[in-house]
Image (tube, rainbow, N blue to C red; front, side):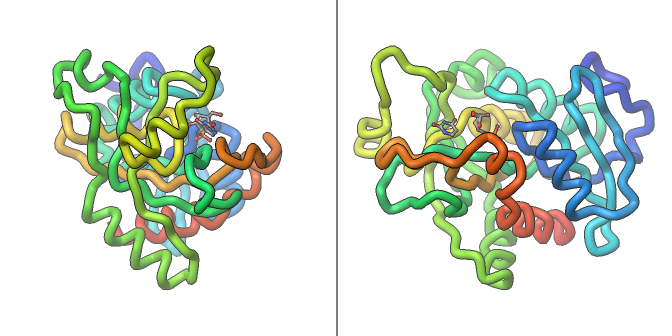
Length: 239
Ligand SMILES: O=P(O)(O)O[C@H]1O[C@H](CO)[C@@H](O)[C@H]1O
Ligand SMILES: O=c1cc[nH]c(=O)[nH]1
């Protein structure tokens, strides 16, 4: 079923097997302009920009997911199920739940914990923890070593809530579930990958700290998170 309600592309050959997926569609544009050659824009429906180009001569697609699980749930499902995508690497920002993480540190997610009903509602599982793909993660670890980029590997919290009336839950999620940081999409991405027998992982850059209250600006979030992109692109061309 292509095009889909959210992706206007009619030629599925214009989408690579591996997609880098930032939340922000303008970050997708930045990645395409900074790192790719031979770039073609493949989507603009709802301003959710997608681009396919070449990295070191190999095809790679970058596509915004929007914020939150319903949004990445739609785009990742359509890319996997209707456009033949095999691997999605989310590249996002996150808030640190531990003082051991500093601004701009890079995290490789191995598990996403969530209170979200996404996986249960879609009929997949009632589990609150879903795993990233081990093959992609091993490639990311090797790429980070080669690029000399330190990586924190761990479980993160995929939250449905950015503004919590009860205050921050960072202490409880860190102490009780072992979550080192928070973002808002990985759990749904991992659910779709599991449901459709595809691969997914997530690289995150620390944009702010729930512990120290340090924070990067919106502009820095859009433009400065290039180290995790380099890792993700190396994984993409080996996958
Ligand atoms: O930087 P992105 O990828 O959007 O990720 C994080 O930033 C947004 C919140 O500001 C949420 O989408 C969260 O997951
Ligand atoms: O989801 C997110 C992303 C960055 N910082 C947060 O506090 N939450």
